[in-house]
Amino acid sequence: MRSARTAVLSASLSILLALVAQSTPLAAQAFFLTVPVASQRASVTQTIGLTDISMNYGRPGVAGRKIWGGLVPYDSVWRAGANVNTVLAFTSPVTIGGKQLPAGRYGVFMIPTPQQWTVILSREANAWGHFSYNEAEDVLRFTVTPVAGEMTEWLEYTFDDPKADAVTVTLRWEKLAVPFVVSLNSTQVVMDSLQQQLRGLPKFFPAAWGQAAMWAMQHDQLATASAWADTAIGLGATYQTLMLKSRILAREGNQAGADSLRTRALAVATEADMNAYGYQLLQQGKKDEALAVFIKNTKTYPQSWNTWDSLAECYGVMGNKKLAIANYQKALAMVGDPGQKRRIETAIAALNKS
Image 1 (cartoon, rainbow, N blue to C red):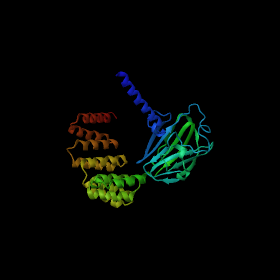
Image 2: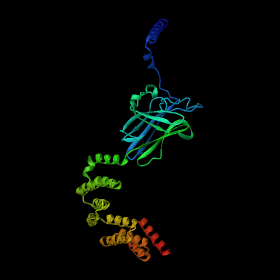
Image 3: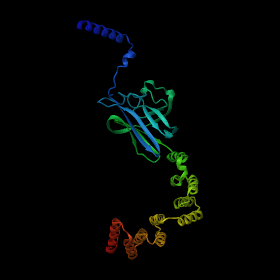
Image 4: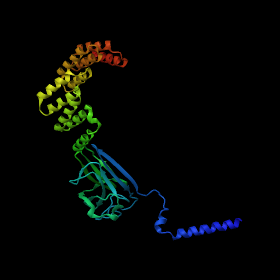
């Protein structure tokens, strides 16, 4: 019985092996397993403003070989990495080599020579390196000058010298560095993004419009900043929204309008608002104006230790030690927090020693 069963199993195995032997090469490839590759994949990303710029590439090693003019021939298209395409991607329009490119993914190729290199960006980002490279798919070609670099065993890309509107992408391998600049209109990208964000739920809240208007003002987009500040005021005429519009009007040269809105803002200011305004004036070197604000706050909120504490600090900045100590003592008599007590006592002690 055992021998009969063995005979049946042997016959079945023979049939299976015959079927495998008759299968096509394509079917046989299905049995290949995933193992590590010699040139490992890597990626690096840099954010400029709201724009993400990334490089995804294979990292071949030097391994004692002659690289330039050897493993990587001169005057031939090279994949600028190993295996599948090196890919440069960005989430907003950028300018490279003097040409603006829309957001997207681009295959990166290079043509090395001993002096100048040609960098190629292709609309084909998913090919297997340069073996299927097609010049008709080029989006951009520009030349760069390689420079000497520190020895780098494994090819890498770095993002160097990032600025508010540009970054330098550098290929580094062996003792060579190949840099090129990616630049963008970061201000316009952010403005477009803010405009889009304000179409959502934040559009119903003044703080969002105020935040957008503040950013626009700080980046000299005054017309848009003014319109967004008006919307913020329409949703809530608070100290913050009115003061923001006042600052924008002052930047536009409308001082009378700025003064009028500042008066409206101060009329609805809370204790904390007035305190913050006083410190703002103090930081701007407007000591007398700051003093007037702090004095007004003590009159409006005489039971708040914080108003007397701030008035004392202002007098200290102005060099009036006597009044600084007197007002610190008023604050000390009211404050309940142990940490604040110790801080004020330390301030008084320092003034007494000075």
